[in-house]
Length: 485
Image (cartoon, rainbow, N blue to C red; front, side, top):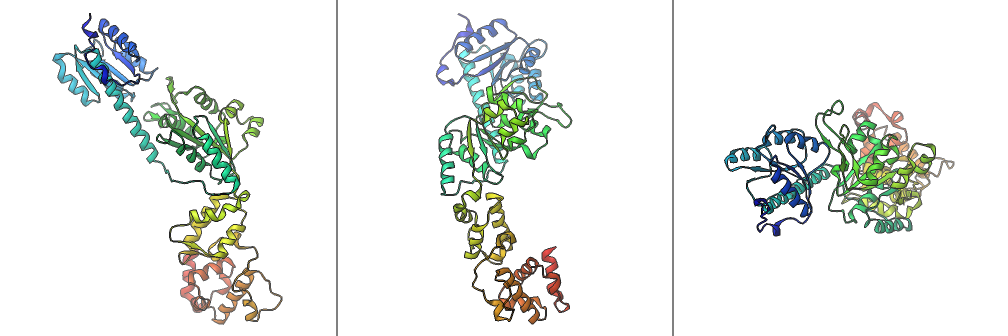
């Protein structure tokens, strides 16, 4: 019996998951015995007799662990390890060394080897050390993926609304989440497609793995390809190092491709290939890489129409459209506006009844994104921690409204033929007070019972800033300029 087949008592500690191993050993007998034994244990082994042969194999295949003999003719194990690290080959290395070369093995460890063994050693022990190296590889890759997630803005958001339309979306998410099939989310801009994608991810068994996003409309064609598939050093100007693509970063998790309809036609076959069999290549590389990623895509375009006009591949459309979700525009579920207002309102803030009514009456062409922007703008402009009608954009307040101050115009003798519109009444009243106070805006604001900044905003809204400036109010005029510049 060969000394290399003594498995000892190490089998119990070996990981059950098969390992992909690159075995680099110039001793034919050991190389052959070790390869056969590892393969019988269920591992995938590719053997090489020299460092040069091993490097050539690494250009075509990926491995979890490399077992490398230090003392080989031609390229030594140390030189091979240097090349592996210099070429950024993702490989954990276990060094094999003789009794007299422990110092070299320590040097290899300093260069990034995971472990070393002295020969002769039981094959069970070698398998055990390969398993430990593989575990380190998995932990390192998981750490890289987590860093990729943390480097992106993963703001927690959720679906808001009890309308039948939103309940229907929530039901679809519940059904779709447990599967691994591609999802296509459609809907107008601002309807919350990324929120839905994250909801699917959180409800899936992949929620502990990465959620990575890319927006095809935000990048030029060359960068979209590099971001998705990665590139090799020197593959184009500016490619100063190897870079993994987002498919590799998201491997084991979910990749959200936003604005899929903007993906250039030339890149669509590469995406189709990944969706079909998980195979991809980095730019400038001939090596096939395998990834396991769930793809969720989103678009505000009609992809079926794009298929008809030739700007989107039909086969890719059917591949991504396995599980479709169509998000309704906000105007189709306006009963959810109140909940959305309360959800996005900052802590400690409130909104008065008139402003809330105006927001409920608005058609929201920009959907939920527009509503969020209105709230953010209003909290900046408001004097106190309450949003009022005066803090909302003009397009939300132009319609007829009832107000506690109606009849003001008549109190000050404005003719009976004046408009009943609140804006017109307020404009006339402000002009009346300004005239009475000789154009002094600081005094006028006190009489009106509002903060001076609010008066400036009202003057801008009613286009009165030029008419109301006075030489007796130089300080106020300068402040107006500061506010509106």
